[in-house]
Length: 82
Image (cartoon, rainbow, N blue to C red; front, side):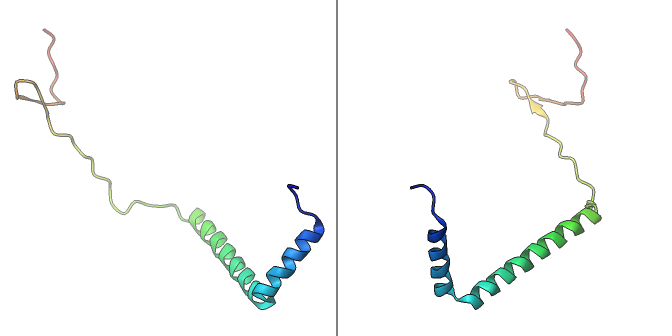
């Protein structure tokens, strides 16, 4: 019950051809083939040219941390023990 026989697939294929017509199916398959070719060409072009950053990436610096009493501390300061 879970699989179709060869006769079922032939009937389904005949119905699809009757609904869409032979010309429409061939044009759809041609469009699919063009899409696959352009995808492969795009993938090949990506491999040839490495991506170069257009400008250097800026570093984001965090604002100084605040302590409980409201004074600011710097992350670049060295803390003295004691």
